[in-house]
Amino acid sequence: MRRILATLVVACTLASRGGAQERSELATPPNGDNQRAEVSQWIGLVKVTIAYHSPRVHFQGRERTGHIWGELIPYGLYDEGFGPSRAAPWRAGANESTTLTVSHDVTVGDHVLKAGTYALFLELARTGPWTWIVSSAPGWGAFQYDSSDVVLRVPAPPQDAPFTEFLTYGFDDRLPNAATAYLQWETKRVPLRIDVPNVNELYAAQMGRDLRGWPGFDYRSWQAAAQFAADHRVHLDEALVWANRAIAEPFRNAAAGRADFSTLQTKAAVLTAMGRIADADTLMDRAIRLPDTDVRAVHQYGMRTLAAGRTDRAMAVFLANRQLHPDERFWTYAGLARGYAALGDRKRAIASWETALRNVPPDQRANQPNLERALDALKRGS
Image (cartoon, rainbow, N blue to C red; front, side, top):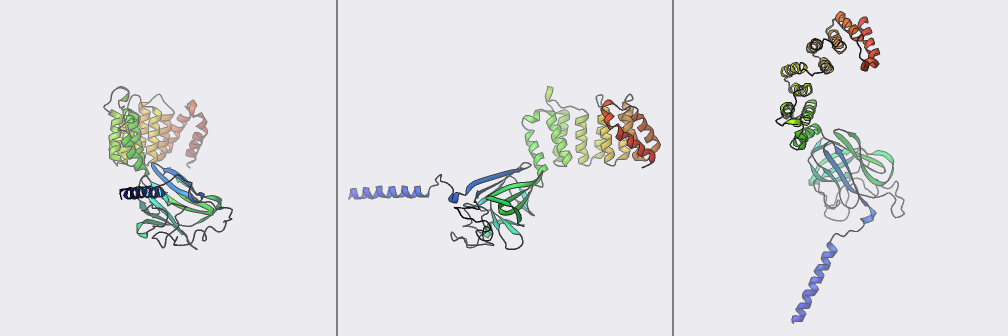
């Protein structure tokens, strides 16, 4: 009896091991030779990845050109004959579900898609646009597709495309804050636009984290971060802190902040972005009077102020530049000419241009014809 029991135990153990082996994941070639593929695209700091299996048009000697869309891949929802789902869209690939992974929140169509990994499906239509379907359940294939897991649907008109043997995903129409993912197979291409509307906020937030590390030991890093935030009008309260640290960061020696024209101008840019115009002007009045401030830098500041429509303020800057640099007779008079012209004082503008043209420095002689045309236009009153 003991021998019989022992034999049964051994037999059961072997059977259980055999079953476990049958259920294990072996490193075998993909079903149907549909090779696994993956493509990623960065949109700013956001990484977008599509992972899929790639079927081919010609399979085992069969010519399937013209028989993919609406035949191999049916229109609408369909029953694959396995699993609980009786009506599912195409898995937008082969074998397992195609997945879409985004590292940060993005916008797809008019919908916000939270950071994470999703199953990506495509529902074909006989006429009109097809529909991308994003599901929160990246299960195996479409066999367990459940419409209650769908987080968004995006219409996508299919486009004619050059013949593509292997189903391929890619990205084009790339912008600093957006890209278009696409599926291309046989002679069709289906786009999916992905936007990152807060791309500059993400950059500024990352800069804030970076400044806690090694970059924070260089005042120029603080200045660069503050200038970026000012230019894009993001994280302005933090940017003001960063600008102040670029001017007077409590490190020593090479890491110490600098109160020079450049760093003060960056802080003024932050103040301007915050709407504190008077404070910015006061700071720039200090900056242009620093002993080592370059005449050209003041001229450029005046030109930017003029371009912003602040004619009186720009004129005050040009006058100060002339007073502070009495021996320089090109940039100072060119600034006066621009300022007087903007104020409608043609007589003084012409006189200032003529003085500037008599003192053109070597590095500006290539631009002299343009300057002369500006003077001629002023004389003609045009």
